Image (tube, rainbow over all chains, first blue to last red; front, side, top):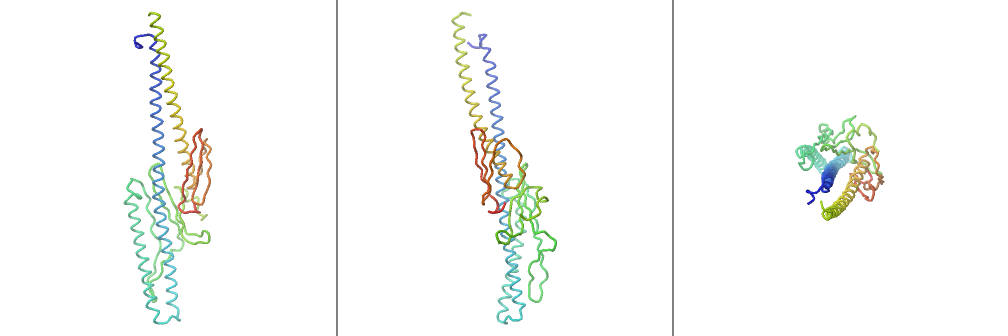
Length: 202
Length: 96
């Protein structure tokens, strides 16, 4: 009946308004879905970078402590007061520290490769920046035994970690420093491009 | 057109228009509420995250209050009738 009457023509704009509103709603829901996706990506990147940064920090801290133990053992071995029966256990401990350090360095290389191969943490087509190589050097063994690791002079004690999934990024810095009377490596959030701006340890 | 038919048409038009308008208003209200909530959540997250990573904040119209805690950052935003709370953690406590 409406279609046949002249008054029914008013229904046409009504239908158009409804159509515009429906299309508008679809557009709005599209935007909302995009926001949700961006947040999900960011949280996933953050989780991955945070997990990796903490794992690297633990390894760096362990290596520092092991290096310290190695120096103490070497100092004990070098001391002329050490009794001959005490030398073999100390030398064994020194070798154990050396082997443990080498295994940690090998694990670091494995982490570097896994990081690139898995594109971060879970094969989600994220784009990782390579994890920096450990710059520690080891001098050839001397008369006491294996030498401790040595950080090259002039090399900054800092590692940068970044994972991206356009248009989002997650980045972290590992610094060596002192916080609340505690020495060690600390991980903190950063963002791409900030590294050159913040060079001092907060 | 007879008067009787004309009257019926007008009544039908008035009723259907009212129904359509009510439906559209309700849909618009629901959509607006949903939009406010989602926008609030998104902007609060973005602002809190920017604070967490030390990135300069972009000025937005929505008032968002950020508080630093030992574990991380907490952001509270209010957009119209919607409000949102976001809590993001530092990699290490007591450290950004």
